[in-house]
Image (cartoon, rainbow, N blue to C red; front, top):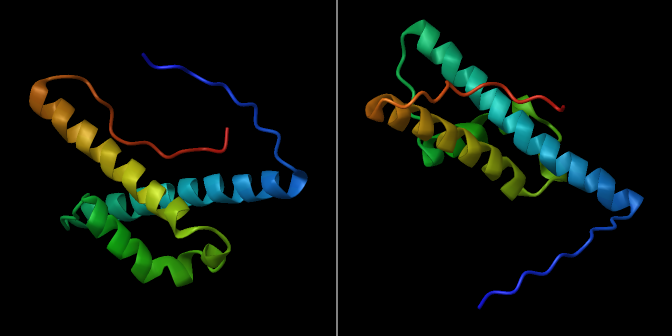
Length: 110
């Protein structure tokens, strides 16, 4: 038997800022890598959508693309890479199986 427990979060104003920074970082990385992949495809280059390759690319460009990257946990950026990798995996798997799964889209703050 499993028992569920609900816990209300009551973050302080400082914690709210940190939570927003981390979620914003994940969204920024996702959008930045999606733009990179689309740009490379438009040029006719093949790009791997594998999580490890996306993370490797992010690590090579993060100092230029996001000078504030060290203010957040590395796992926030890693989550953005993982989310995009999963989105592409779902897209390609959907195409193989005949399901309609849309191409990954940019994420907005809203």
